[in-house]
Image (tube, rainbow, N blue to C red; front, side, top):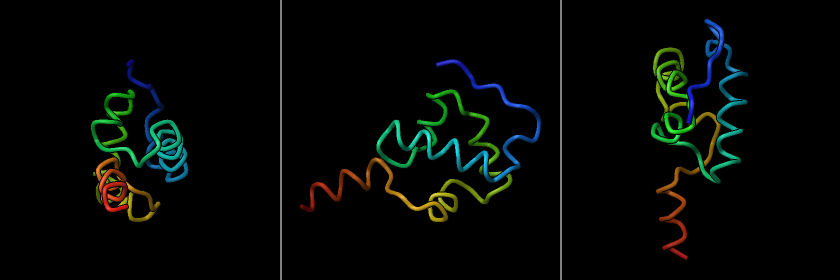
Length: 78
């Protein structure tokens, strides 16, 4: 997939980050992992999350949601 170009400072705005993550989450059916961002053209967002928001784990905790592996584990537990 091609890289998504955004203007300088775009990822500093939490609403842009949240909107993009929620869009990917809907498409994938789970909270995106680093590789999912990169595969979908949002590699720059990964760096911004690390730099401005304390890392992907912190963002996931703030927004809620299961990763792909957590979702699979919960299915196995059923």
